[in-house]
Structure formats: C-alpha cells, structure tokens
Image 1 (cartoon, rainbow, N blue to C red):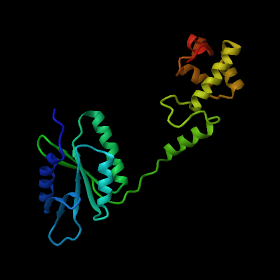
Image 2: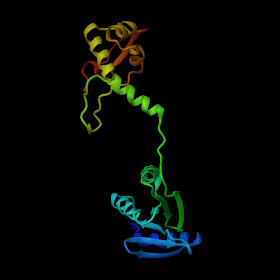
Image 3: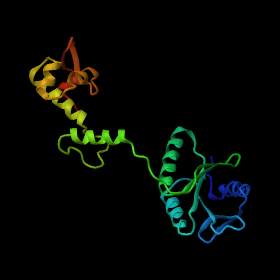
Length: 216
C-alpha cells in the first residue's frame, strides 16, 4: 500500500472549504492551504501532513501568528490502535488551540474533529485523589524516571511486607498479618494474589507459593 502524500489531501480539503463558502489557494507564503471568505480579514489556514508529527504541530503553531483559525489535516486513521493514537493527538491539538480534520482518501470525505479555539482542560477530582493517595502511601522514592515498566507502587510495597511476614512466620491468618504489617487490606490482597505470591492453605490462613518464596 502506497503511503499517502500531502498533495493527496489538498483536493478534499479544498473542496470542503469551498463548500463552506471560502476561496482556497495552496502554498501561500509558508502556509500549505489558505482560505478566505469575501469581506473577511482573518484567513483559515490548514497545514497538511501524511501523519501527525512534531513538525506538523510546530508548523501549525507558527501559523497562529497569522490567524487564530488554524487546522491540521491528516489521513484518516486505520484500525483501533490508529484511532487511539489519533484521539490522543486531537486532545493535544485542542490544548494548542488548533483545529483537526481527517481525510478519508478513498472517497475524499473530510471530517472535523476539533475547531480552533481556547481550551480549558477539565480537572478530574478522582484522578487527582488517586495520584495523591499513591504519593502518600508509597514509602520513600523507589523508582527512577523512565522505569521501563519495572514500577514499584505502594501496592507492591504492601505486598512485599506481607511476603516478608509469611516468609518469616509461615502460614498465618490474614488478620494477624494485617496487624503485624500495618497493611489493613492484607487478607484481601492475599486472596486476590496479584503477583502469584500467596496461597490459601485453609479458610483465612495464607502461605507463600513457590513464586512467593523466590520472587523475581
């Protein structure tokens, strides 16, 4: 399959803008596409690229020195992974005040996903609470930025305490482990057994699995 070129996007984008009543011209100054309605003094500028890139965003942001109406146009995504990446890039463009359009090259359909304009991100109290809780519960600073997936969380630190207790004392009741380690959810954590370290030997009593006795 041939990789699309920026020129493949121009005709559909021009047709879309002309349908909105604009006169459209390509390669005007540094801009890929410039559109202007009669009587208007603020042009619509569209930067074309075969895919999202830092270069595309830099060029589009530079065009905001000329107009507040700046869009980026890219080919429509393919598949779920493509959609997830595209959606993330749309969110980034919104934060930069840029509009986003996609072009379905097989039939020239242009879809607007965001219009240019100021953006105020919505704060998530749930996410903020979760982050602050993890910060408060985590002991010390066991990670280095860019851990390559080897992340030590507060949950793992708690699991390590349970593992260490069972390694020293052998099969124990969940309530005893919780009291001795200070991990209030000890029984629940051992029952869930996220790391494969724990096994229930009888009701309410847990011991270590071979994996728990010799973890990675």
